[in-house]
Amino acid sequence: MAIREILTDQDPALHKKCHSITQFDQKLGDLIDDMRETLEDAGGAGLAAPQVGILRRVVVLYDGEDELLELVNPELIQEEGEQDGLEGCLSVPGLWGYVKRPERVRVKAQDRRGNWFETGGEGVVARCFCHEIEHLDGHVFTEHVDRIYNNEEIEEILEREGRKGK
Ligand code: NI
Image (cartoon, rainbow, N blue to C red):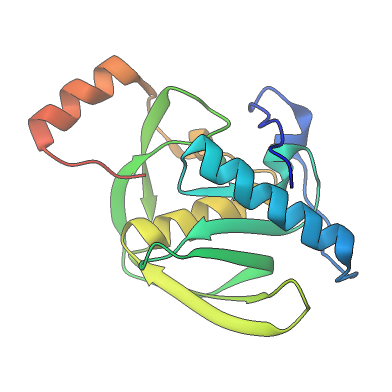
């Protein structure tokens, strides 16, 4: 296993549509293991393969129980409600913005062996599913925000509001 470099959104890899996984082999297992290690090291809520320069449909993210989920070829299959909350991204370090997302989502995905399963979440977890899955189509949260806040500005806002999203 190895920690991979996380690319910033200046990199063209962050703006391309990723290919589906068709080979459920050791190479995929190694990528997922490296993504897990990279996310744990970076301390974010989720990580998509294009963020480490691999244009494949693979995501790792923390669910509502703080379990690290592995999603291969994930698809949103149900969206309910709406929330407006603060979002950041490991590829957009130090910058934040408010993004509207569904309050609850259901997702289907394959595991590293190719078995399909369903999962989902609400609140910040639903936000994370949407954020990571849209990375696979070359989208970054900053496309949805009216304005970007830096760390200092966001700390002031959070002190006022007394809450923080991911
Ligand atoms: Ni991101």
